[in-house]
Image (cartoon, rainbow, N blue to C red; front, side):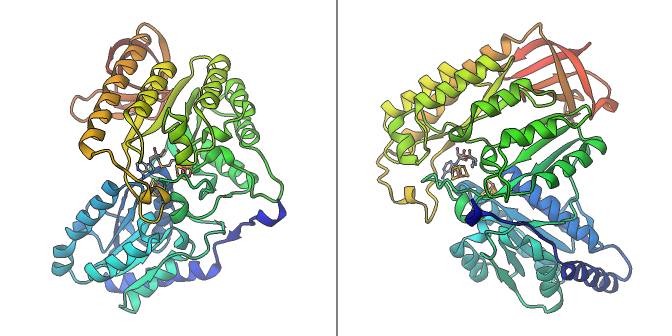
Length: 470
Ligand code: SAH
Ligand code: SF4
Ligand code: F3S
């Protein structure tokens, strides 16, 4: 393991100096008023967690946060590259800022995140969006203050991407969005290179944070009153391989689980090839670990799984699921699926349908294949029309709706412990979630938000449950 061992570095003192300098400059520019930042985050929780670090740094540099770009001195979009649709949304929303910049030339517009790690995108932004003053990729977070300082002070456009993808930095000031539900990144990057996926190219190689740092962060979150903590990684259950003293993911969650307190521990996203019996046993025997496994299978056809480079087959996946169902009482399963991978036939697709009928997932995240520049699958022959793929996609949704409805209906009459997450503005009802990640709506006072409550499930409407406080 020695050759892959990656040791963390601390955020440098220099960056703290830059944060102070920015605070001073902005104080003069704003004549003592607090500068405002507007951050919009696209994509997965990894990006949300990165934005929380950026917000932490901005807060140290004297910024407050605005709810709308119109009021902000600094606007940042943290972007996602996983599908074309995600990228199109970013382009559309950046284009819409052009007029704002014309009216307020002093504002700084910036883009960061996964899209910006792609050379062709950064070039396109450089050439077509001259009002964007700062662009940086996922590997540049550790010197964001320095980049921001250059863009603010020098008045030149600052573009940076693609350094340090084998490093880990610690010591970020994190400003979490919530106070009872929070993200805890435990590893970064991915080594799997599924043939359709852009993530390994924009997030770099897999690297894990030190176990002790994670334990202390988890401890701090629990002490601060967090009730729902999700450990994050693109391939979370491969955790620990790049450490000086390798640890398994199961060992990590067992140790976190020993921390006293009333909280749920979740994790995302697990890869079926790394879903060991040790991990399933840890979930089954855990005190705080939620009885939920998000285990993306992508396709039910072995031929397609091979073309996707997923390193498991249908049989292996179903064996893992069977073991998990046997060991974990009340297990809730969710998954990701890609429809219309290049070369997929209707026969292949039917195997995906049969797999979801067999497993009975609580819910699914379903996507139509989107070719990503620079990935192997971009060049695969893809003879099936978009229209045909759309029909298969709808068929998948219909089948899943039927399964989810049946599964939810079977919960009516049961008692469940839920975490109250918020209030539905339209109806005034409370929104809650079970340990299995199923949504429950119920009547109650908004002061209950952020607390665990016991509810009786009274009704099932498709995949949403209705409940009553006990
Ligand atoms: N690391 C996680 C999640 C990766 S991205 C994992 O391996 O499961 C989240 C989901 O987006 C993937 O599981 C996959 O279903 C989907 N996805 C990724 N690339 C895609 C593409 N090019 N087209 C369509 N869906 C894609
Ligand atoms: Fe992408 Fe595959 Fe890595 Fe997930 S495991 S991030 S799908 S390459
Ligand atoms: Fe998107 Fe990057 Fe996450 S591509 S899905 S934001 S890792």
